[in-house]
Structure formats: structure tokens, C-alpha cells
Amino acid sequence: MQSAIQEIRQADADVLAICVDPVEENAKVAQKLNLDFPILSDPEFKAIGAYHVLHEDAGTSSGFEDIARPAVFILDRDGVVRWSRLTDNWRVRVRSKTILEQLSVIP
Amino acid sequence: MAAETSTSAEANIKRWPKHAVWLGLVINLVGFVSYYLYFVQFPDLRDFPIVNLPLVLAGVLLTGVGCLMMFKQGSSVWGKGLASLALLMALVVTGFFNFYIFALSYQLPEASGFPQAKTVAPDFTLTDQNGEQVTLSDYRGKKVVVVFYRGNW
Image 1 (cartoon, rainbow over the protein chains, first blue to last red):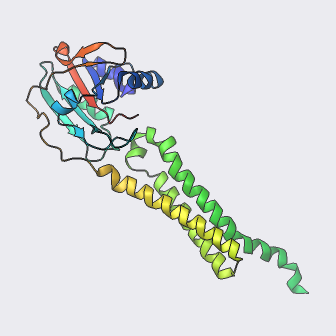
Image 2: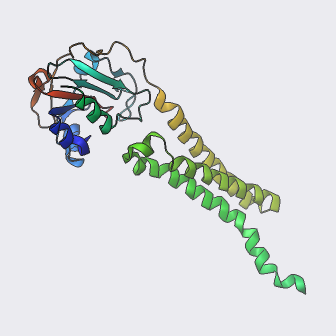
Image 3: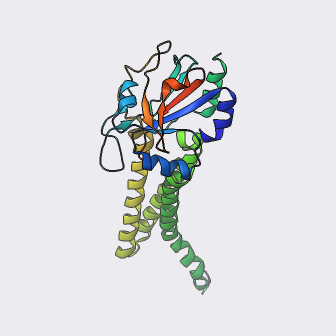
């Protein structure tokens, strides 16, 4: 995602990443991978629940805690969902190329 | 007399199964570990491990053949025992890797109830890595890519 961030911004879009980890963890990862888009912490599953992407008992850092399944939602300028992808395999992530293609067809 | 000149060659031939066992195990382990340490960064190779799966399989095969030959050759009990242990280890690694690639990572909940196309995405306000509050609806006017990560980096 980070490698495509310039192109995503050029398409007049922004990226918001969400995961269950606390702010400090996200800060460490953002620094380590040089991520320059917001990584939002959702330990209470507010967004994860609202978007129905909860994956129970699947975490690996400290026992089997609840986390999110990988998912991407692309919204238009009015906040309406135009595209979404929930992969059927948690090793497979949506490609940046796919995201850029989808962004290009949204006005 | 003629038999003597071939003993060192014979000795080398006799040793190859033992080398095969250990070389196979090394290849097997390297194939397995390098997936997680290195190859996962490349989406094409992470999604289907065309480098790592063959390595892991080649390794266990080599170890298996070496082990078989050691038994056929009548190697020492110690040699056969170690070789069997190496084979067992390679089989466990191979089994786990295959399980991970082909089964474990498909275990996801039913995908249902998530916001469909043409519905307004649920709003949220969460804290980013710098401690700032970020609200989705503040981004109206721009397109937004909302990405959910597994986390537990």
C-alpha cells in the first residue's frame, strides 16, 4: 500500500488503515515501514464491528484474541461504498493495482 | 587387486545418502523459514509460494531418498536413527507449511453483513499512530480507501 500511496493521492483519494492493535504498536510499525497514511487503532472493534470484518479468536500475538479479517472498502466523495473486497484467504491481500483501477472509475 | 582402486570411489558413493539426508533437511528448512522472513513481502510469491513450496518439497524428497538409501545400504543404527529423525523433521515442516498455505489461511468467518456497494459507509472516529483523532466523514469530497489489517504485526 505504501508504495502506491503517491498514485492513490494523485487519484484524489486517501487511505485509512484500521486494525485492532493499540496506538503504540501502530506507531512502531508505521515508523518501521515508513507508512505515511493514518493507521487507526480500533481496540474496541467500533469500526471493525460496523464493517462486519471481525475475525474472532484468530490473533497470534497473545493467545487467540479477536482481530479483523483483511478487507478493503473504496468510498466515493460522498462516503458511499463503491467497491469492497473481503479475501477468502487471510494471506492474500488486495493488490495496489486493483485499488488504483477501482479508484479510476469513480468520478 | 582391482577391487582396491575403487574403494575410495565406493566410499564416496556410500556417503551420498547421508549428505542427501542433511542437504535435503537444510533445503526444506530454508524453504520454510525464508517464506516468512523474506518472500512474504512479494505479493505474487506470498499468495502462492511458487518459490518456497517447491523448495520445501524438494528438501523433504531429498531427505527421504537419502534416508531410504541409508537403510538399504545397511548403515549403522546411529546413522539410520539420525536419518529417520531428519526425515521426520522435514515431514513435520512440510506438513505444517502445506497446512498453513492450503488450509489454515482459508479459515475465515462467513463474509456477510458488511457494507454493500451503494450504501453509505459507517462513520467512525479513531486514533491514529500520532495520537490524533481521525473521523471518516471529514474526508467527504475525496475518495477514501478503507483498509482493515489483521494487525498483530
